[in-house]
Image 1 (cartoon, helix red, strand yellow):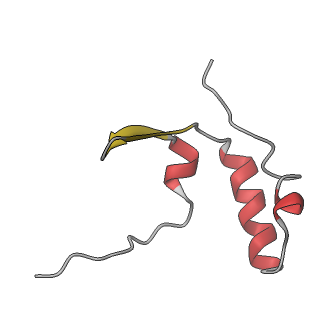
Image 2 (cartoon, rainbow, N blue to C red; image 1 turned 45 degrees about the horizontal axis):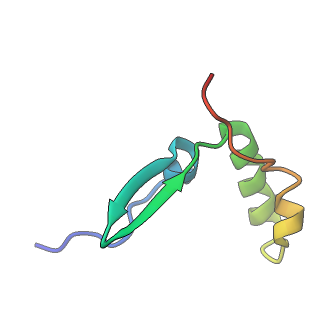
Length: 67
């Protein structure tokens, strides 16, 4: 029995939901992001695979902390 190395998803759940954790002495904290902004960024990336990070940042403006 082999486990898949990549799970199929239409959207990057890790980026949308965020995460935090500690492993091997290193910590990470990924804040959640807005679903609409991430989907707009994905559409931009699909339409133009050579899009730059600066161009993606016009769609994905930053973290969307729950209030």
